[in-house]
Image (cartoon, rainbow, N blue to C red):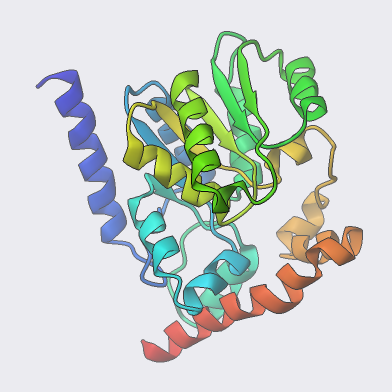
Length: 262
């Protein structure tokens, strides 16, 4: 079997396994953090483009509102990882089989600790030059292609095309999309549909800001208690109030409705 056929067979096998373990009618990956890192490491060397999504409660709320485009994007992702301890806790209390929690912040931190090397070509979409420089300094990152699109870029088809072309031209092992949701997921899927890119795109949210101290992440004790959301709300009330007080509860309701349906 050729290398290309072997890679395609492994991809089909992975997707078949995901199909057997769905949660909220989505192909969540029932793997832990170490397995996710190993998977991304291997996929980062591939000649084709794959992407990783990490939906949290606020992201899931969009599905409860009937966002079929986002659902399709999750279906096409290489890995779909649950980024909400609250969703997992509520699901288990309601008798549902929830996937392991693998947050985007934890995944990205492990990738920089264990996978990214000075010789690893990486691409970053979003964030500031200061953040990128801090990554260079702290992790001795060598080749970094950085593009910072304008606000609302994802509503402009021409600019979306420019960003996608930049990702294709970078030919990076790892591409970190840190432009917020759902725009980062839409961009990752657009790159997949256009073709020509390689490696793995990580829909990474605020993870690089946590790594570079642009924003402070909740202490581990609060994370384990499923209170990371409360910490972020206290730290940035105006920015995070809508996400945690308006959108996220709808994501929790989606879990409860699924429990009732079953």
